Image 1 (cartoon, rainbow, N blue to C red):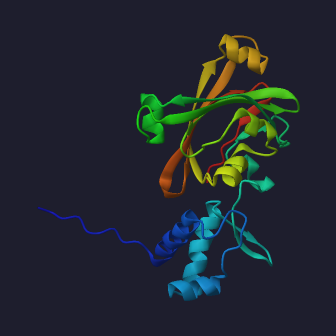
Image 2: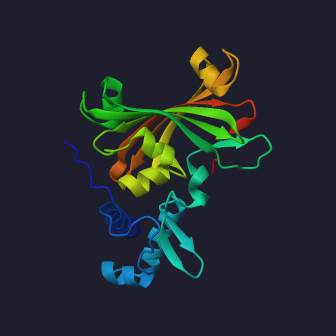
Length: 242
């Protein structure tokens, strides 16, 4: 019987994993500076070059942000530069404008089979469902239905959403301590049903993009299941490949 050999992990990846553990434990909060490369090298008993390689990879993954002359900081959704990281909708003229988030509904429910499978929670566990519009220059462009684990987002209400100024992920980060670090999306074309057409102010049957997203926090834990319908009459979906 052939035995599998253990997977080799480069040293810088091991250091990256240790830094990730510190981020997950809350040792360094979003927006805060992390120790210098020299201090981290001493802490982990490795060279500065090894630490630098780990940090370079984390910066490329938008987990950390380097600021010239200031140091390296934990990435935050409250940084305006991060707003379009997960929102890939671009106006036809290419000029990015921050949208207005308009919460429509927020209610508590019990997870069905699909929600429990995607969010990795027990069937019947409490969830929170949010429905909201995104408006660009006053025009509705996206209608989202968002499913969240109820235990993680206890206290989230329609009033909380309406009072918050800024991105939804910024609210999740500051109010609930949940940082979204990556997402998987599935995109397909659909026709607008009557209710969606009314919300997006398009004709029933108009072509829309259906964007289904599962978003993860540290430890590859799913903390959001989102189903969005996008009007592309004046926008397009941009995905940069490298």
